Amino acid sequence: MRLDGFEHATGAHCGSTALRDLSTHYDWGLSEPACFGLGSGLGFVSLELPTSPWRLFIGRPLWLESAFFDTLDVPHTERRGDDWATSWADLRGHLDRGDPVMVFVDLFHLDYYDTDTHFAPHSLLVVGYDEDADATEAPHADADAGTGVAYMADSEFDEVQPLPLSSLREAWAATDMLPLDNRYIVAAGDPRADVGTAARDAIRETARYMLDPADAGRDTLGDRLGMGRHGLPGMRAFADSMPDWPALEDPTWTARFAYQNIERRGTGGGAFRGLYAPFLDELGADAGLDESFAAEMHGIAEAWTSLATVLYEASEAEGDMAPLLEEAAERVHAVADREERFYEGVLAALA
Image (cartoon, rainbow, N blue to C red; front, side, top):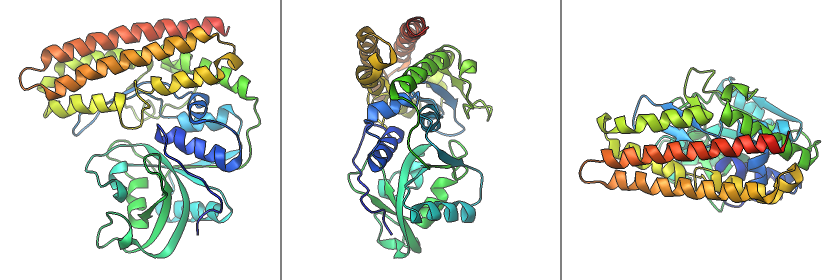
């Protein structure tokens, strides 16, 4: 079965694209940048990994999707930690009732990407299933994929993609980057909060989280797992680690991966700042901010893009990459100082 009338289009970021698809499906009238900002989507999480690329940062908090439902007061169900049989039965039941289900997976196990790189959490919507389909006919599926497919609405693909259920099972419970625990979210009603008020609350939450992650008032997942540094402290710690990268195994890939997490991999450019700025263009005034805040965020996004070019050059360096990494670290510290002034200004304006 496939959900009747479900519409999907590509987007800048996996989570905000999935939320925008839900907005379209339920007629909430929210753009992708609006969904991103209403989920307090701007952030910073720095992680040390046990395998290559060894150092990872994400320019958004890990709770974006949950925050969207909470801030807009959308009735919803969110679960994690059940086994495959229970989780799949729940998901199938929601689909049978006509509701898309957001899941959080490791992109490595999504056959249609045909990639050997782990990346998680990647969020997308399951919009149908066929337990009798020949899964080996799905794009890039293994010959032993077996029977059954789920239909995935993914930000990187124009068309809904069939995925073998065996691959969904692995992707949904993966642990290589973060334990994903078969987590899912499904809407059970329409937003009950005023959008302008929700935008104001979300902008405040972003500013408080970036200035002091302990003030976020949310489970940041990384903290709960004893993993990672968050907000501006995490950004500065990440910068401080850069000069040590040449001692890592394959530092070229570490630098290239960092570049990609600023300009590619569904960030909207500028480490997600290029996605947050249009949110401020769209809803900043409704939240109580003047246009100077959106203009400054566009400038911050450009600063991130500029430092990304240094990381790319480091990844291409044939000789010593240390000077380029030192320059990149200085630029991260500079943009962290600029962001600190921005968030302090936001809180003063919205006091």
